[in-house]
Length: 142
Length: 150
Image 1: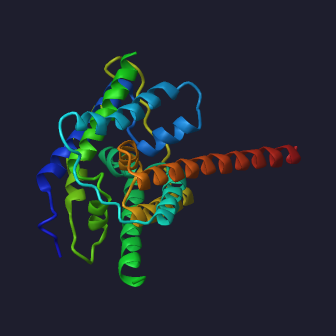
Image 2: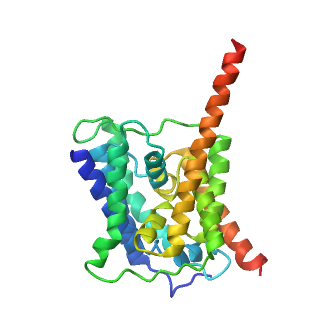
Image 3: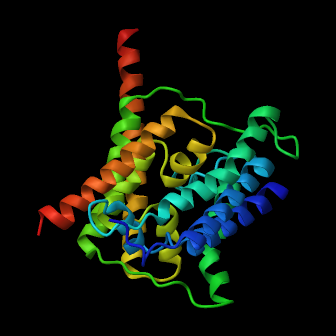
């Protein structure tokens, strides 16, 4: 059943298009794919030569909430997961995105935009697994 | 120099898009993943919006193969639907489903000072370092085996 009260079509679509612009800028000027797990993974693994643009991208990302705060309040954020589960989730996300070569940005947006079959498979798998995890936690554990 | 500036602005714009779209709110992402409950389909529109713009950029990239500054564009060349892709994506989906946080929003939430998100990001970086370490071990083993064969 669709939760019409929480559904935010306009900000979702506009925000998405802004994300698309960011991807286009990085691709057309720097020649790189805006896959965040790949950019961060390469950054901490200190790969040869391409450290600077990765650091610049991540700096921009980290500056975003501060720039936003210069104009107004950040939107409401609710983190319901307990600390132990957040650690577990972080480990799974870090390891999984590196093994699978991408996350929601790299596979889910960039990969689908360039019609990569690998990314279609990855996206279907991580969304399905995410839904299965939420179902299990919300309806089977309690 | 222009490349670094573009990367900085790209990161900044990306972050603004993530904040505006609502995707930095883990509760909203979990509401999307909760398909049998009160389902919030907003994430679908975030993806549709992003893809509808990025699609044309990738068309340009494939057509010209170089950037506006005439640098080569680096696109992934792997085609294989291998075990790494499948298991890695499933593991990522599991973590995403537990927390409702993926790498981009995680970094933004951590930079905004949410303690839970800082825990998530530190663990994520640790997970990436573990991956790097496992890869090195695999590579070393491979070399060792190659030497034994000779």
